[in-house]
Length: 622
Image 1 (cartoon, one colour):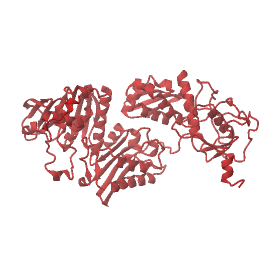
Image 2 (cartoon, helix red, strand yellow):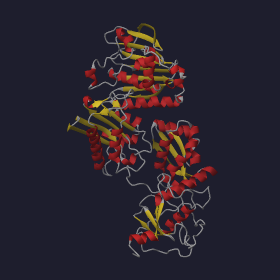
Image 3 (cartoon, rainbow, N blue to C red):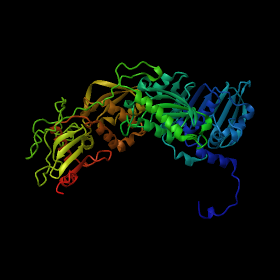
Image 4 (cartoon, helix red, strand yellow):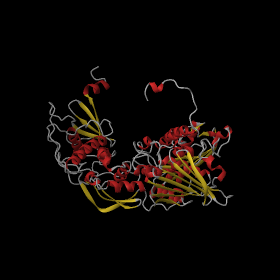
């Protein structure tokens, strides 16, 4: 718009068409937004069965059919008018909204940017009625056969606002967004049957009142079988009576992505920072950094204690007693997690039998390829056996094939059979010195010419493995090893789709994964460095990451992020007892590795305390 066009104009009232299109900009972000609004209308109409059918990712056609109480023929045209609703009547109704919808904008907004056909029948009518609207203009109405309930057909979305189409993603992505809407609503309303058809094929079918099946289908079988049941109610709070119930995953079932987190307030799907903070705090002491908990939780609260009228899409709410709600959620989850013991393996609400093998709470340790003898004592002055050596040094380590330094085709994650050539400092001691002890299974203590070197062994080895894997990938791909017995993993349908989508690119990253069912994949080959280690944990994290990449072409740009995650799995863990030879091997490898001063997450891998600072700490020479 030019500066001249912005000159003073008389104040005027916007036409209904323009006003509806402005509202559509807030309500109708993408096809999934329409599905959400129509499904919520069906739920408010007390539907027990909801069927959704989409074509072309929802851009070509969306059909939502329910068996709710329907719309009287005389009210059909009013249902498509802006700010017309049966859910509230006056300002008093805004203080305690119990329905999912209440603004009366959704149908009018959709009708302003698409072609809409509304067909409905109530129990008091002998036949149904049909109303057709395009771009906000009524095309006609007529009687139409229809069972009790409502069908809304939305086609040719954004036909009159083509600029909006440019902001939409691929058909697969839009379809995935609609699938997520149905999954959230299905978890929020287990008493309702849901069905989703994509281009004429049934993609999702969830019978009513079968929560075990629903949890297993929408999350994973492991979650349905092993999740911790939560159900606590408190009546004496500033927010009135509060009840939190549902299921939370054990810390060992955390995920690399926050993609399986569902929270509902009075049946409404919400995203709330206060709630998210309370849940993170509850998991704080039992979850590794960067991991995300899995949960399906329902908060029941007096409708007058929560304001749902704070966002056009109704995804956000505002609690009138925010601190009370936060503390209740945190306290409930914190207690339930604290009460768990390794021997506790109950199923989610006893929906399914407990697994035959208990879930291990101890992280599986990768075997570490290490040299023996005095290979790392080539430099004069290298220390011999230390009295500070760990008492657990005799721990038996399985030693796979050892990688030669600088060989990009060798297995990663292993230290060299001989020390890489490292230029000595003038003192004859290498930059990171020689190891003298291990502290609490976490830090390597070494002595160099300056003083004391403290190394975070996991962070350091993670960087070494990451750089090795980058080198291998650039050369000929990550070295792989076939599993003697292929492993089957239970995953979500979206994750199985991702494995199928990216299967051709995975071998270069050291993995061979194949889809073996609707919600299962088979792991056949793993990076050589993980052979004998927790390859399943790596595979699960990698699959979760793959599920966020909808276009195979984008995988190339995400390869280094995936390698960083793999390197974390291929690195030595805390509480791993290392011999002096192993510690020195790591020090030498750090000295010839790029960016060895920081791990893949930006944390320092070592610090040096020179003799001057040590003398000052002990007041020597003063």
